[in-house]
Image (cartoon, rainbow, N blue to C red; front, top):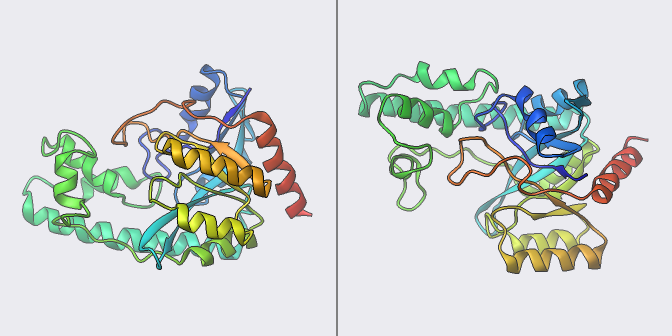
Length: 282
C-alpha cells in the first residue's frame, strides 16, 4: 500500500497532535506516513522513536523553508531520514524558531492594542507542542474570542495578508534556498522539492534539477496544477528523480482541508527514498 509523505501536526502549524496521525493513516489503508513539520527536529525524532505506530511505518521528515531571493518567493523542501544530531540542521531549526517567534510575538503585541479581548498568552497555548508561535495559533485564539470565523478567512487576510499587506504582518528573514539544500545534504537527508505550484517555483525547480541539487519532486499534491504535474513527471523521468505524493495535511488549520491519504506516494518510490537514505548513512 502507498504512503502519505507530507503531513503537519501541532509540532508546527497543524491542529492535530502527532500521536493521532498514524491511526488516521491506518484507517485509510496506508502502510507508511511521513510527519514533516516545518523547520523542526521534533517530527524527525518522533519517527525515529516510533518507527511503527498503529501498524503504520513512520518515515522521519521535516519540511525546511528557504528563500529564492532572485525571484522573491519562499521554497519548501521535504527532507527525509535526516540525521537528528546534525549540527547544521539543528542550527537551521534554531534560527527559524527564533525568527518566527520574534515576528509572531511582535504581531501578538500589536493585536493586544487592536483587540482588548486578546492576550498573547492565549495564543501561546497553541505553541506548547512546537515551541513556536505561528500565525495559525494567533488565529485560533482570535476565533475562540469570536474575533475571527475561520483560520484563513477574511480576518487572516486583514491582519496577515501579503497584498494588501496585513495590519500586523511581520515576516521572518528566510535562509537562501541553496544554503538550506546544503544543510539538508549535510544531514544526510533525501531532499524532495515540495509543491512547486504553491510558490510558483517551476523556474527555480528546473535550475535545481539541472544542477543535481534535489533527489525528487512532490508531484501529487492538492495544490499542484495539471501543467506543473505533467512537467514535473517529465523531469523525474528525464533525470531519474524520485516522485512523491503528500496531502500537506494540517487538520483544521488550512484554507481548504484535505484528509490524510488524499495524495500518496507509491511503494516503489518509498523504497527508493529508503535506499538512498541508507547509502548516505554509510
